[in-house]
Image (cartoon, rainbow, N blue to C red; front, side, top):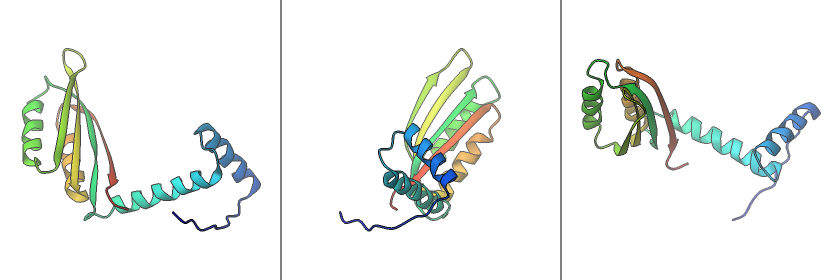
Length: 135
């Protein structure tokens, strides 16, 4: 793979803080850290495109004794069966459950699914993490 060299200018204080940060994260050089920051921005801007193809996970914690949350979760998952690749369910204690849903599809549909799940009564926390498939 070929690379192109570019120059970047930093104020000394900013460069020092950047060097501390990349050392903590284990980077061996500034170039790779800068490339990762750029990739992250490209991916995040691409995920905002409602038509883009994304893949990721929805992690939720819920109290299975509140309302019909288990039935409602299953209903939502069946409604989005084309986007759901895999689910796993863990019993945290006698009431709380952790569920991880691996999802893939159009960004707008994935985000809507996650919003619907997180809004259910009984869901205590939900976190969607998605990335573009192609960038």
